[in-house]
Length: 338
Image (cartoon, rainbow, N blue to C red; front, side, top):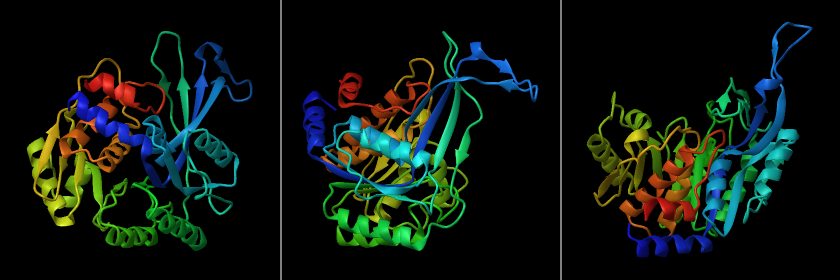
């Protein structure tokens, strides 16, 4: 991508309106000072003394943070949090992002806030060390009235936005935002608005999803293709192209240290190798950065290879941010690519 195309594509981001639908989490970081370690008098067990607590949006919220870092004009989170302290923290963190509208982000006592609690040991001169994570999730089906409110919000927003991003983060089906019922709402929107970029990523895999723009990793592609392995970039390109032609929508496959592959319905495909690693890395959030950058690039008229370059550069920037779920700005992308 040359400078002229980079500036032309990214200049359009400031005029975009994007909705992010899915499982918004709270990432709560507990920063531990090992110099203040104690032993509990009562139990004899080690005590980790927390000297700072950080809270930031996670899950679909990480995608939203990346969109905000790219300067997107309007951001519409569509999902829910609980009527609890974590929900308060999550809404506060979301509202602090520029361009965010919380009109369609539901707070309800029928759900608890999906929370990743991450204890981090921060020793001077050393990289952050994450201890065992403490997760809070919902283990019961999403109530029908919650699903209905989210479906109504999604239908209303679909004709207003320039791109729609879907993230299914839960492990147990139908306990999060993208229930089977909501996926059917997405199917209807995709049929009615075939030109709207709708990108989907699901921890459970995309089997049975409507023909939207699929984003996945190599293992998820192999599962979708019902094969043991899709390992080499050329194999990934071929398999991704088959799904792109079948769905009539692009397909993107992240390959970790081997880069990213994309394919379009017209038979075109491309592989962009990963950028050089420059020190320690933390891969958390890389896929979300890819998702945000693909959505913006596609909504701004970028070609396949250009979209892959932007997304790949964003992932490279994010993985070098330790002890946090990072983002990549246009300025950082410019520095990396040009």
